[in-house]
Amino acid sequence: MTRSWHEVFKGTAAPDAAVETSAAEEEEKKRGWFKRFKQGLSKSRQNMQQHLSAIMFDKIDADLWERLEETLIFADCGVNSTVAIVERMEQAANDGKILGKDQFYSHLEESIAEMFAAGDYQIDVSHLPSVILLVGVNGTGKTTTIGKIAWHLQQEGKSVILAAADTFRAAAIEQLQVWGKRVDCPVIAQKHGCDPGAVVFDAISAAKSRGIDVVLVDTAGRLHTQVPLMEELKKIRRVIAKQIPDGPHETLLTVDATTGQNGLIQARLFGEAVEVTGAVLTKLDGTAKGGIAVAISHELGLPIKLVGVGEQMEDLRPFDPTDFARALLEA
Ligand SMILES: Nc1nc2c(ncn2[C@@H]2O[C@H](COP(=O)(O)OP(=O)(O)O)[C@@H](O)[C@H]2O)c(=O)[nH]1
Ligand SMILES: [Mg+2]
Image (cartoon, rainbow, N blue to C red; front, side):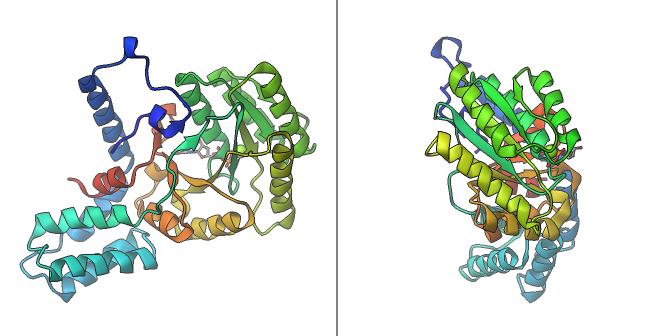
């Protein structure tokens, strides 16, 4: 089910009863979000439907399963998820549950949704302050996602501070400052090249003294193969844990959907080096192979907490496996 932001951010209050929107209005809003999400997935949906449209459904036989398998592989669902989905479908067919097109699609929707890793799909902002670390390869959307999250958190009544701990590139600090201006929240930054740990230390100190709710930490994303980056990330985590023993409360890994299986490999290496609590899948609007969402969650065993389906603030959406499967298959 489409979730609203206060359902995603653990630690934010439900809308005030006095100004609470009616159930019908809430439904209407959720329909709007789903429509937008579906729009972001249109390339992937067209691709999927084009492949499946050749199926006649007059015979449920090996040819049909082969075509389904090809479709899923081509959509970048990954080999393991594909095999699991097809097996589940064949089983349902053997049990007499798939006799035609409608049942095929409804079972496929269910089977895809079930591939997503079980886990906590919420983002924990219940601490004071809560610390959220964004990690991932360069260009996967860390800085942009931080700006978008900051805006949504503020909409839910949380105060936010940004920490420019990607000190490796000068442009990265400026980019975060631009976001800080845009969403109107403070940015703690030092000079290009300085110790990212020091920036994080300052940001947490500032959050504590000013009573700010959430610290969002931007980090560098030089390639995973570089040992120093992983050491740097571990050091940042130690600096956080020294000030806040149970922090960071979330470590979100950004993965660029347009990089397909290659992005998945990079993400896996990141995930092995730092403890990650969830994934943010960005640029889902820019690919016809949205099945990568299935592969990422299934292969990494990570819940996808957020997805980017465009460059606007509203194009960062809470992720829901059932919505995803529906948006991928629904006509
Ligand atoms: N279309 C689209 N572009 C995105 C999305 N998320 C990020 N981008 C773009 O991807 C590029 C790299 O993002 P950036 O935040 O700088 O990545 P970083 O290096 O990981 O911090 C920027 O041009 C963003 O505007 C998304 O969900 N959809
Ligand atoms: Mg960046």
